[in-house]
Length: 226
Image 1 (cartoon, one colour):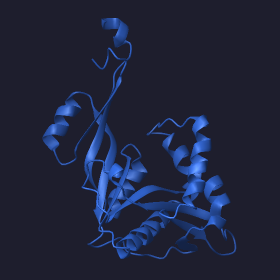
Image 2 (cartoon, helix red, strand yellow; image 1 turned 30 degrees about the horizontal axis):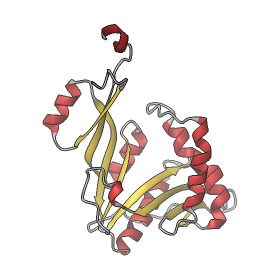
Image 3 (cartoon, helix red, strand yellow; image 1 turned 90 degrees about the horizontal axis):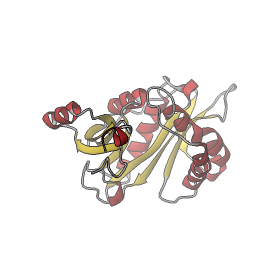
């Protein structure tokens, strides 16, 4: 019925720990695309480690130009490359920029920046992470969203600044702040094909609860069969 309606991209969300069910879907040529994960804020959190030449701070409206112009393209450009190959159409760039600008005026958004200090790169924004209070609409079958659930919405670090511990320093600050604010769990999701991101968020302590699986059916089947 899906094929007759022209639906050739098929998706399913399934419990990450159900290995037997995952095997069944893998045998049907479905593959992992997205991980929906959680991290308890009641236990040990990422240790705060100082990164030489970098200060971690909350963003302000004064950061608008750097945040919109320099930070908004990072994730889009990274995700459009190998091995993710996530489509980012040019006509979506304007809306993305507006969304980043709105983050700095949204009273519910907690935007954390990593800023260079010192003589050579002083003031250069190197990375960011954005946290929100989670809403029921953010429940991707991971947990039951409550008023004490934080959402890690988006995060990225400049390619030339990766490997220095900046992402971990941002996560340590953001998660500690959420815990201090009374949140008991943080939820996040990411593309599993984003190898660096997948490795990083698992290393920070997030644990997948649900995977989104996908299968792309060759659309030629529409006229080869029907």
